[in-house]
Length: 174
Image (cartoon, rainbow, N blue to C red; front, side, top):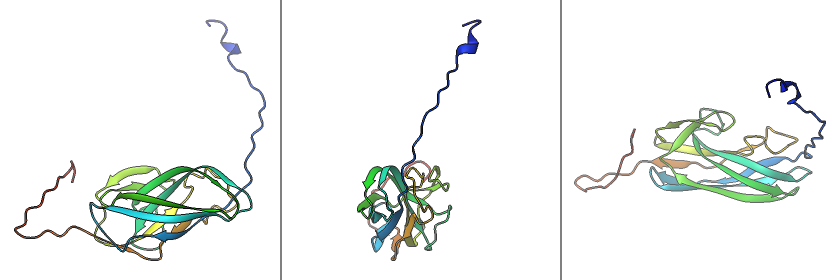
């Protein structure tokens, strides 16, 4: 449109409705007593809507492993679980994540993975679950969306026996 560029815009009013606020909380985080690097680990938790309105839509739960009970942006990400929920007021649901303990990631406060990390050093780790990290669900209280396991998982490396051959593979960068 050589001379008709001035008619390429149209505007009309629209109505945007925001859902009534719910209130999601995390509880009952269960971790195994111990884990060996390279093996699968399952962490489970309960998400509950303690608000007066339904919680409906897509959410992302981030699971972190931390040496203390307080979440910090430097805590490594164990995994992110994305799903659609429809929780009535007072309703709860169970969730779990299974992943290999040898892979972890750094992330920002919104759960965007920023870089891989070499894995977990041997030690005791709490699981911290933060629900709705992208704030897709409208909530009346946003600062109660995290929970911490009461127990820890002892992460260790496999024991190698002298004079016993072991078959394994390394990926680039390991």
